[in-house]
Length: 503
Ligand SMILES: Nc1ncnc2c1ncn2[C@@H]1O[C@H](COP(=O)(O)OP(=O)(O)OP(=O)(O)O)[C@@H](O)[C@H]1O
Ligand SMILES: [Mg+2]
Image (tube, rainbow, N blue to C red; front, top):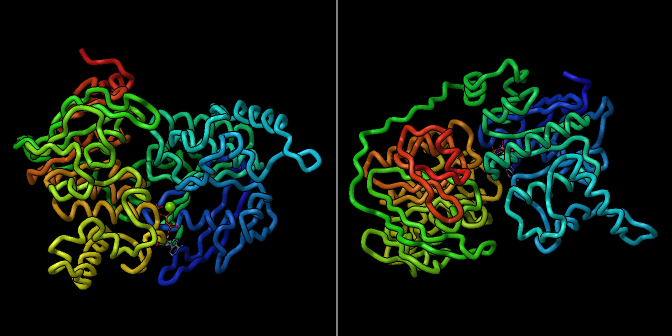
């Protein structure tokens, strides 16, 4: 390890009913990329939130470059050269990229913001770290990958020497992730230190110098990346062997479940987000939709789920035309939906776990009798989901907001799969999940398929698509430009993703 930049020792933090951190030690060398791995709810974000002054620790000490520091709030943290990019972004939507970057650290002359100087500074920074972006776009109009760039630039503009990235790649496409890695390497070459949280073992292996693994509020081990491999990491994280093989029964597609014909849709960013798209999903198959983000996958799912109105074409469930049905009606036709953005469409963050598990199902006879909710049944069901999916939470009355990101995701997937829908629309179902939970949820998708249900799997994780799909549809500029069968490799997929149609 290089000279010590940061040392956290004996960090303890409890929330009502949970010991989130139970004496954690973390040492990070200057100029290195420190990976933090650990299952959902292990305490990774909490540890970083303490470092960044968002939470107060119950016990422990923090030193920077050998000096003890007291971080009472994020202003203190920023003053000490810490910067953090969260799992959920915090940009001001109606300000430009430029305004967001300099917000709170505007260079001024006699109390007036010096716009010219600010712009020159930011341009120099953009060039230095290689995070290209148009400074005059409104933050709300940016695709996710670019919002993240703004967050990073903002932290650096405030003088961050230690940059904390909490699951930065969960929201990035593989290509965007590659670009982020390049910038991270540039930053560390320039002497910055990066703390990198991720669930993707491949990424940890590719970008970090050292790795600390956490489990249930404790550090399991810290090791040099050169001494790590998939099995070592997975074992340390989960405490057992992680399997990566699934039991696929024979491929026997049955009745037609979903038929999409000549679908067209306009989006906020593009007039032809979907440009005459046709495909079908049958019972007993997993149909994967792959594509570089922004090629229509979001619009496709939203059209099917009644969250967006198509401008042309037809969507049928069986023989029933559903183009104009509202979401609540679509859900009643035995369709499950794991949405892309869990905080926006999947959960009500201020509702409890128990309330969230029955969202969308309150009229179901499972949970009510003659229109009156049956709290006991709801609570039993919530407990069942929490147990099955290994959700770490203090109880079913905890607000969804207080669950870790991955545990929020488990609640949604559990809820949607529990109803055994004929057709499941799974949009990034394993985003933010640890290796064990990813394996579990993927195996449930395979079980659904083996049991004769249909799954439309839309994912930016190409390994997930290749591992699970019976057929892969590749979306490019709102059209399906190619279809691959099980057994296809990343090379073939890659060519189609780039818009090179198969012959
Ligand atoms: N504000 C809070 N109130 C109550 N409990 C909390 C709060 N923040 C975190 N926790 C709990 O502390 C534990 C650690 O959560 P944390 O968010 O640090 O996990 P994580 O390792 O980042 O997980 P993930 O990989 O899912 O993001 C969890 O059990 C979580 O429910
Ligand atoms: Mg987290």
